[in-house]
Image (cartoon, rainbow, N blue to C red):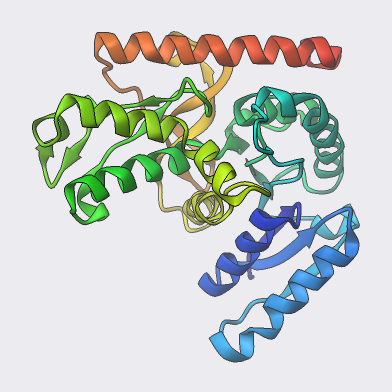
Length: 315
């Protein structure tokens, strides 16, 4: 039986997700959006490209939550994107209202799905979704670390003029200005990164990684990144559907790991067909641990702000 992936939100990321999933023949696709015409139009457009690309995949666009029933994976991108000068914190009030409606729709129609959240501010929105929906924490995860790590890898590859595939690294913590790139644990073709790039250049790369989303927003002027976020979401979905058990940096629920309890934050996790099957605890150096704790503090503060906006989150 063919797998089914439902995409909540048919904006730039949603449309790109639908296209990538179709090309990979990963699953049939349901593209949902409250703007029905946008969802139907993009689904039809991608479906018509099958004659050129030759992939076999059914796509439908809809504004009815009933159509997402029995999805294997649901990827949420619904929400307003960041605009120039807007912080992730500014998005909170609007996107909390949207995610609450989405959680109700998923809980009612497809509560057994593996849910990947991409909506910003990521760490708080994925935690809010889990609380609103009541789905298992092992089946609710946020996409952030793969994207942040891919940016870090790209900047390193450009600086060293080396294949990105030879770079092994991860970015942990919250998805925002306090994210924690891990240069001391980064290797390039088996060699330690800190032996290949001087400290000043490395600091510049770390800073650019932290501001990676804002850089694209400034360049685009309207909207935010969508190609790399979509590719990152697909990697997570594929690991779940194909039971690949990849170790990927994701916003996952921590219950004592890394000394953090009852909070979502970016850490390495193993994703297989049971969802988040394991949280991998790295041995962090003192400075990395300090930066990780700063990032955790920022996520907690933002979630506390969210709980003030909607007291249901205190339950």
